[in-house]
Image (cartoon, rainbow, N blue to C red; front, side):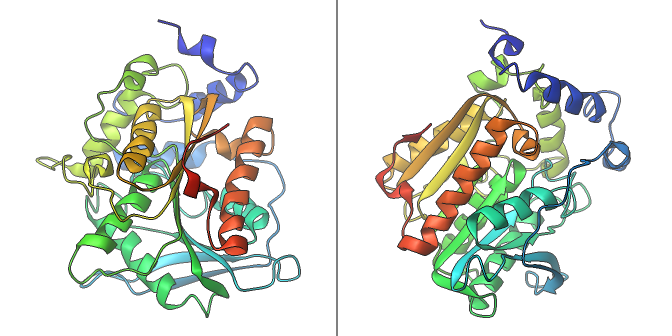
Length: 335
């Protein structure tokens, strides 16, 4: 078996190592969410300029029944560069359902807003272990419903609503669509596209990529085991399709664009979801970045592959508003 370091793009190796050096030793020396968050908060941040968008607004939107309002951050593109109506994207950040927040993903969302010309609604969902599964899914679905109901206020095109997320956020994006489709009282708006960025979709954690990419490229199999433990809690059912969307029947879901990183424990479940969608009659495009690692999109300012992937993602979202459809309608793979 080829070692992960040999398969990782040499240009990405220094960044993967640097990120790993400052990341908490989850499931090892670090066992609590509070300690993990303190370590991550003390890590050096990006020194690059903040991508400029038209406007940014923090607000609260109605939460699920019986729950508090959900904070969101709304990013508007420059109206001179992209007059409305525009695509509207409900975005869920990654972080294993435990770490990260609106601020950690601010630069990435700004870049996607700028490139795509879409309005982004970034969701500050409840995190585990304080609020375990399915609280975050309920929050994501509540924001999706709110965005659909307020799309005119946001300057959006009703035919160009998109759900997106990275890592655990990709899990929540997929699960919110399932909840909106299936659960009584959670009827959701029509969604044109789901964009899943190295998504976490299967609590089983039993794929070849979990073994071949278990360690050595930032995110490890041990990290993921700890994240799932925090999210599900004692006795939590990882087989529930809202926890593991790969177990769901995807018929009737919107077209997908699934980006995976070759040197990532989560690679195989992203690929499997893409093929499951196609097998169920849902169009999907797979964008495989073979030499990249989990989380690499955050390095768009310094890593050409990340910049190119971000441009592709922005272009796909942009196409929803321009064409009323996505390149995902034909299925297949994208380079």
